[in-house]
Length: 255
Image 1 (cartoon, rainbow, N blue to C red):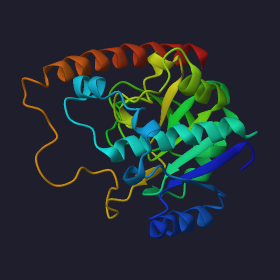
Image 2: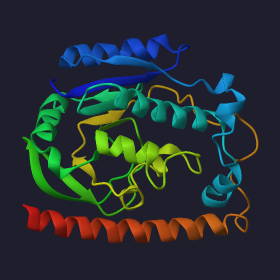
Image 3: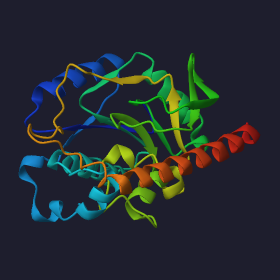
């Protein structure tokens, strides 16, 4: 698809996952570039230093796991590769995503309305309480989110978004939270963050996560130690709601 380059994040030790998503992309006629994921089993000292662990513990209320850092750094690398290319937009996919037949039509719709978004989520774990405002393809609308919508298995970004994530006033690095808790904070990055509803991509629950913590004691702190995290989340969701309502009003008048 003209203007869109697709990257698939995939661990070297997970060829079966690559084969699974490769078949889906071939079926939809979407060429892609494989991006070797940062392997949490072989993090370098420089990669480990990209985690601000005290901030993570304070804001997330639990201990980090190496897989989260590997995932985070893999998405950051995808943005660096995107900016080094001449593509107008990047479709970034994790290798456990499910691609629905409507994805190519949704991508074409996004390319026709590039002034209306900077980053668009194509999948999500929570609903995001979407407010639709623009039809992209039959049955699929671009929407503003009013609540949390975690997950980062499929999304599209433009070049201004990638620059803001990497080089803006509040860049992604160092890591202070899991990736999917940060990259949709449009108010932080000064971006038009959106969601396609219903989502044209989903998550394959039959594929085991490569990020999960090892078995043993719970990662979560005692509830008393989690109070700073609860305070952070409450403030964050209030900022999200204010941002979403402001963006919805802007889109209403823009339309």
